[in-house]
Image (cartoon, rainbow, N blue to C red; front, top):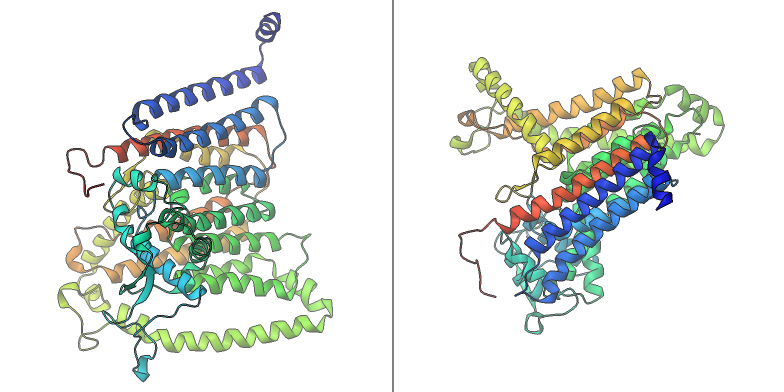
Length: 554
């Protein structure tokens, strides 16, 4: 008792912060437990069902206690190590709260990732085109690939069936099987490019080799996408010279967590945009030695981005954020002839590939999409996209349409990037607005008040040019995608396109500050906001089908 009295008798700012940390942790944990017992526990359901939700809350409470302990006891911490712990915990929670098929276009992504897994296992597609002009291409309603019956027939039960899908996933079919559904079935759904699903496809492949059941297979693909975020984030936080706190905060936004915990190939776009940006800033440092093969690594990041979202190839301009004199002093004057050979081969490759891209895509992009004229390719006139001819005849109307779309889209995209609304358009699960505001405040406060050196102004200009070019390209693509008759609707610049733009912008505006108390306090506050976000999401999803009949019989 005397120790407690002496502790409070000599109060100072440090002790006040410790008391506040413990108090906030206690309140948030108690509130989470109250929510769990009043909303998640179902005494008429199975133990597995209740355990499903108990695991979510155990992880959230463990993360809170861990962060509070570091704050109160002034323990040493580092961004990379803490990010791994936080990302593992929160992506795990997000996958259970927002289960499979809740993400944008995730049904198609699941089939495509499964198809990629078939390729990895050496299983071929069937009835592909034999036409010499498009040999081996997919033929609608004729071509097919095989899926295990269990993985094919049970998937629709997870599609827009909250809260009933929790019961499906909690039944224990992570390792168990439906014996009557083990035969392979023909699937006539055309998959997307397999190269977009290498990570999630590898997860499904591992689950199939280990003999997992339906839930195990479908979760393993998503889990591998989460692992890629964790690994890429760890490496980025090791290499980034500035903006570590900004990336840490941004990567733990609910919107980013959900996208990187789903089957969406936007995960690849986000991570390789991050890799390119990180490496460009890393190599720009005076003490980092530059080699010719480093350009190969940078080019590899750009090449991987192209099949996911071609527009991100414009980020290649960030390579010029590396001072040109480094290429002269570190490479040209190195007298290592093999480096000159590498550069010569790469230069020749750029010329060859560039000429092919221009030849192949000029007509599609310039003639068909932007400057499409009547009498060309047959189109549905009711869905005629904005063309140069229409713009010339309706300049003010088109500009007004664009401006109104920009205004609406800005807030729409901020909502989805931070995570105010999660899931596909038929779901739009709601995160409490207060949580979104708190997380945005943590990002902005860290950007302003965490002091340190920033990147040079000319580097900011180079980075800004890359970001602006990308946004303009995205905007033009959306303008040519929607019709003039849809002027009353949004242009709908997809928030998934803009996540790498906002993420890299935030990192570029950060400082080189090391780990400190303010940064850890902001991370702790964001963690508390994430607990409230998960509870808010669960509450929304539990009541999503109130008043509606069950979509199927158990």
